[in-house]
Length: 175
Image (tube, rainbow, N blue to C red; front, side, top):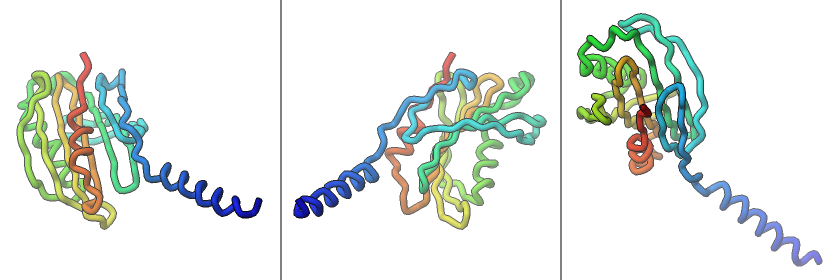
């Protein structure tokens, strides 16, 4: 009977290690209030925080998923309807610049994009958070008076470009 004990211990350890190493399957996430859906490799948790902007103070509704060396984030902010009169590229540029500044970063690339007629930007930033070198990939969109920021952040040693891009491209604005 004692001869089977080491085998059981090894099997239990193997099962534990396999479970710890397995990557969870990305799951769809929908925010009815935010009017968006995204497929995330980690669970997203909601929080809200006031943010001062050039258009006044607004609430930033954040959906954050943290996987240690990687984080995934969707933020939506609803501005006063008068923001529709502003130049969308100026607003998106300001949002992009704020993100770059937030991680003491430098812009690696930046292109204009479109999501179902909503203007946007897609960019990559190299920067630092908590004294850690990081890469941030983002897509931001302006839909009416609502700003969406979709971001994937990883320390430079753990960047998975395919996973980050899949997260960003899965984002959809709901009607």
